[in-house]
Amino acid sequence: LDCACLCGGVAFRLPGPAGPVTACHCRQCRRLSGHYAASFDADEGALHWLRRDTLGEYETPADGRRGFCTRCGSSLWFRSAAGEFSVEAGAVAGPIGGRLAEHIFVASKGDYYSLDDGLPQSGRW
Image 1 (cartoon, rainbow, N blue to C red):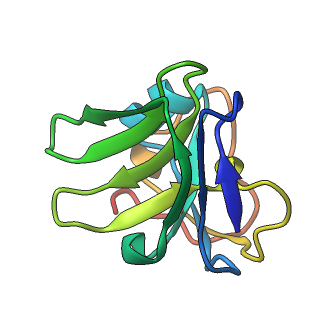
Image 2: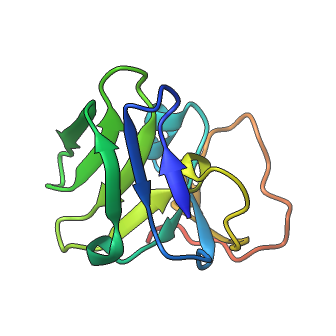
């Protein structure tokens, strides 16, 4: 899977296909993305950097890390404090091979949309 930010300052490759995609509706993901974040779990050790000239990291209040491009602002990945690593589905150029499988943190979702796709929903992670 070829992944990159909007401006191309950050690019990396992962083996594919991606696994199940999770939609996170927590406040942090909503603020980050403008809606909800869709990501899939990945093996960070299998990540191959092509470019990281403009890579930035943000430390979350819960000691996680979010990778993003400092030039264009694209969100790229999340690493939890426990080490779980996920890649933003929108960072993948082309088909990812995974499908939306569940919604998490639905108790925090915005009031301007409904979840009616029949997928499993959880109030937390």
